[in-house]
Image (cartoon, rainbow, N blue to C red; front, side, top):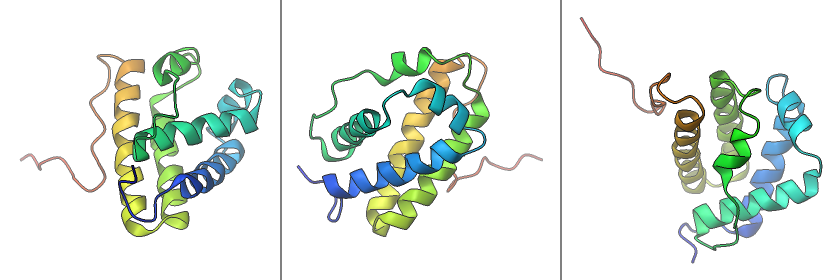
Amino acid sequence: MQILEDLDEAALARLVDQFYAQVRDDELLGPVFNRAIHDWPEHLERLTAFWSSVMLTSGRYKGQPLPAHLRHQDEITPEMFERWLALWEASAASCLPPDAATAVIAKAHHIAASLRMALFPGTLKPLVPRAQSPPATT
């Protein structure tokens, strides 16, 4: 089932490839990802299947993201989530039509917030979506 026009397997594969090319070269994220991933082509296929399942409800992804991230918990910092999201947003905006980019960005924020809370329980507030800001206090 295709939820958004212009969002299909090929578009998601392009997004994943572009995004993770940036991640691999990123000063903050690259070292962690490059130590953790030993077979990048296989990992990119797995991540494309993940985003296909999330965005297209294809059911192609059969893994469990949380345990995979928990294995690297000692290397992950809360700041990495902000950088990950910034790179994801830039990649989505550059290679997807606006509606599709908005949808994958919103889903990424939700996923990042869930992972962040699981990795750092009780220590962090949920991420506030960039479109919203907390109410002003006086």
